[in-house]
Length: 181
Image 1 (cartoon, rainbow, N blue to C red):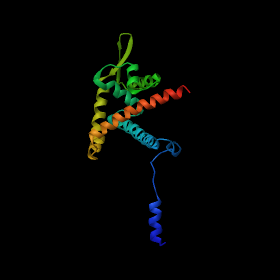
Image 2: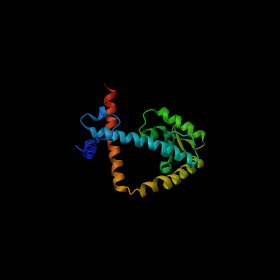
Image 3: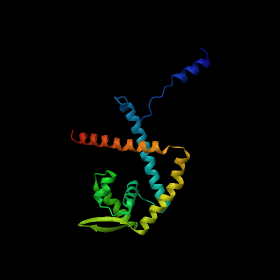
Image 4: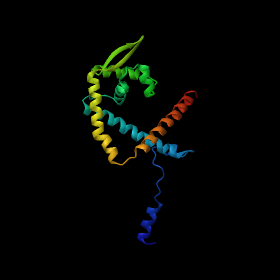
């Protein structure tokens, strides 16, 4: 075998399987699920970094990813929200996490409290609304334009989003089952 043949053969032997973070999980009945999970891990961390840095660029530094999500949830449809509403929308079981975020956002003067019956609600202050507008402006300029320039198909992105929401139900059901073991 010549040196060139050996190089060609070694290159041909290099077979990459699915890109996963845990080969032991990918060795089961549905290896592609492990590949998806690794993609979700990378996407989740990148998304969290993005939210924090975008919010800092908009004028509110030192927020956690959850703080930013809570802020945008409160801004959604410009309606007052209860803690239970925020937890439900964000699929958060531990209400104290949202309560802590609310205190932090209140400290930045982004929220105003109110009442709906006997329940406490939160809405955005004028400053909160301004910070959400600034976040949107930064997002449009840096992220949306980048995704559009990459030629990503909007219909396909919508299909992926629907698939992710459907998969979340499977993970939730599996989590409930695991909690009962």
